[in-house]
Image 1 (tube, rainbow, N blue to C red):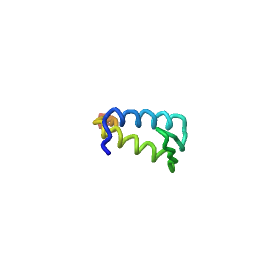
Image 2: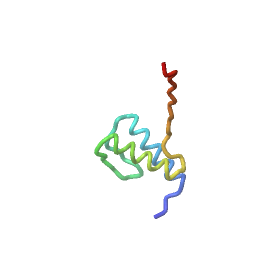
Image 3: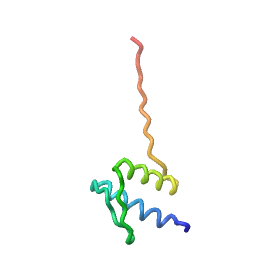
Length: 68
């Protein structure tokens, strides 16, 4: 079964809302899923973002030193 971008976006929105609530057990479209941890949920959310082409947000920090 192929999942389109709209369906992936719905799953991502639902999963991110559950993460924000700290819920490990969710029901989406009549299916109940129990995750092992919030970390697992975050990894799945990042995978869904990659499917949508968004990927994870990466931050770079520059540090400068005068060498004194």
